[in-house]
Image 1 (cartoon, rainbow, N blue to C red):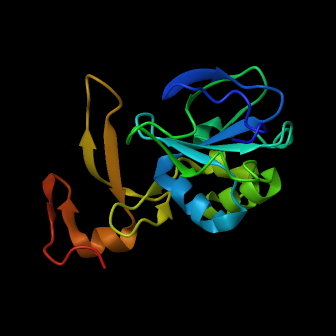
Image 2 (image 1 turned 180 degrees about the horizontal axis):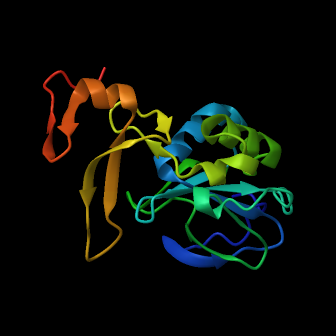
Length: 190
């Protein structure tokens, strides 16, 4: 394993204090897969935490220092000294999965390319947080802000979840209206 990602746990999962050799950027999994797809081979190591539904990229220290505050969008930049839960280099079953291995020759993602991929997905970071959260359509997977709630599950033992549909999928796959329950249409997603 490369020493660039120094501090990865030897155990399957552990809380790690971020060293001075890398910083972390976390994105909501619901739309982070689009970012990973846009980056393709230009992405360094990427870890997905299925429990908290976030994906973690590793960047050069200080690489996101000029990024605006984006917590409302679910984007967090974690600097040296911050804590993050990570899996060891082999991941941990289906709970924490490496989509791009930390053993790659270049495990750090260029922060400018990461920001460009994020902005391609959710819009300018300077304005994106003010526009509201971004969801992925449960039918076509497109990132969308103006979404229709399809399902919502509350959980006593962990985070609940909600699923949303974009306008076109809402119109073709779900029937709804004031005071009516939602019913899936047989034709399904396209």
